[in-house]
Image (cartoon, rainbow over all chains, first blue to last red; front, side, top):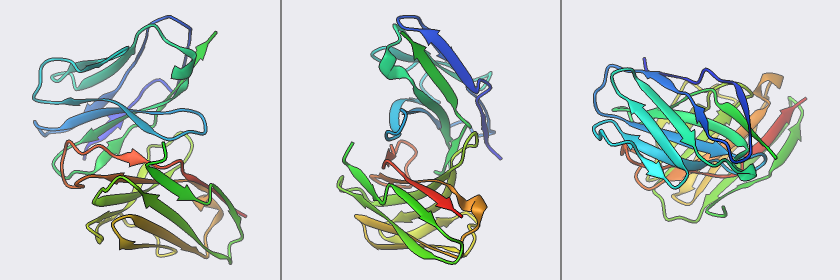
Length: 113
Length: 115
């Protein structure tokens, strides 16, 4: 069975710093998608970034980028120049051939002023 | 953030009550989902509807009963719940459902407390 592990329950950094959230997954499939979702306090879950396993180039969305290491089954999220509005729960998710999203338990990220 | 709406936002109910959660999507999507979110646990997928037909049912207790009258509306009917059912219930929608690239759009959730 596929699993997604986020080993950091909570992280805290100063505003403007760079922070990396870790995610590892387990699968025997070769073609799949990986996602990072963000859930701000009392606000809706939104997609931050996604990566297709067949693409070697790491996905980037403005200040958000991923480090996708397929052999190591690692999919970390880097947030550059962190802002107060980045404070949220961040969830890593995997989607393979059965089309269900498999979720990690989340990392609570706090950006301090 | 108004693409997927959920009502009510908060609900407190006793174990013998019957209530319903409502979800509406304004994005023209064909698939809708119910998730249960408990603290420090991964999201649990409860039900998936694609083109108004249920396609996933992850061994959810029968005290939860979904209904999808059309592609824009999704309900979760609740009866004789247990205190361990207290959680945030999230609704989501997506364009296709059975496509790996499909992005899910979430509602704000209903915070359910069972006394």
